[in-house]
Length: 248
Length: 306
Image 1 (cartoon, each protein chain N blue to C red):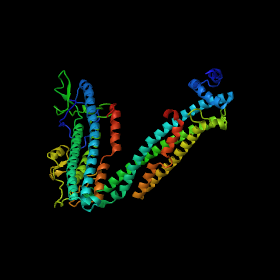
Image 2: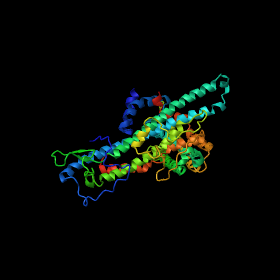
Image 3: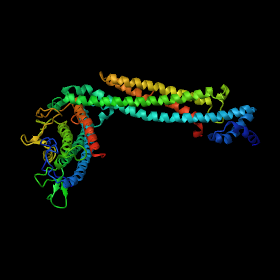
Image 4: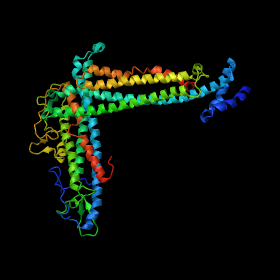
């Protein structure tokens, strides 16, 4: 407790942001325990406190990424239902092109053309809205990318450029800075690659319009459902590390 | 007068296109200036009322059509399952005595239920079109009582032959006379009337789906689908007194009348798929145009229709 009193004033000089104040009163005690046990110096103490505040900031960024990923999941279910609607129209195009299949409807001239035109119109509407959904996916990828880029930038140019050792420093159960940065990179990579996969699936769908094949449509839909670039458990384990306090 | 239910005798837009709105300056308004001043708000109130009925009937149609689609879908599924039952690979279940027979009986019962649901959706659609037509025919606003009485009142039915109910063709809100409103409403209702007859043909096909030995003649276009159907269709001008059967289904902008020939063979899977798709496609209803009509009207009347 005595050490706590001695060191707190110089800590205050470093961390003067109001939202970091909680860290000052709670953390130093843990930090001190850690430092005293390892017989480390004052510079280490200050460094650790700064790191701790930075980690907090990065957790905040990752929280934003988590929100974006939740939005991704909503878009995913929207894209899936759009895809299903589009592929069911594509699948029946061949059947509705053939006047043999119109039974008693053939008493109306031009019925084949009318139904076909309407269906193609609906298909076009769905394809346009899929394009819009893809744009929103892209927006998410860009936003995660920006968060990641900004974080790297801050580490590189900040006045307190952390050493490799500081990056790895873990205070209590909190994640290290390196954990946060790596998490950001991995999440960005996953969603970026998945976006590109989805974009090619969607463009493959519009080419299938002209030569529909049920098995191809099925395979494409499975690709969309699976999201092979985003292993769910891996995403979960990244968030488990970053937001460990929320679990404990 | 805001909820007029009987069609007005003075106008019958279903028979012919309403006359183009006369130039207000060439034909003097039959109403006195003071009456015209009072006629306007009454006519505005009435038009708002009728257009909002049209808008809500459009929603009614959409919901009846979509529930009809899903009932027809279930009906077709039950029908096909029953049809393919004899050739179905049942695996371990094939040892159970009479399982196919029982399954068929169940599927047959299901078809009966869905058949009546499809029919009731069709009834809803008939009612919708009737309501729409009603609104279209109730757009005029007539002077009630003698014009020299001190109290000026208006009604939906004409008492004076000289009163055309359109205020002498003057714009009701900003630009449009009563007959222009009627023209637009008529264009709208035409689409739904045509689509109703197309749906009727599909309903007939669905109702006569059967796995039993097909009847010799199949169905006839002149069969009445439910008691009173023809009276309802008569109100909508969809029953031809010459041929004593409903007007044959037609596509928009397509004039030729080919009599409906009932198919008495059991339709295959592809044909049924086409029937369901045709139900869904609503080829006679141009939704862009319908939206456009409502947009124009909302702008003219400065109200938001639901």
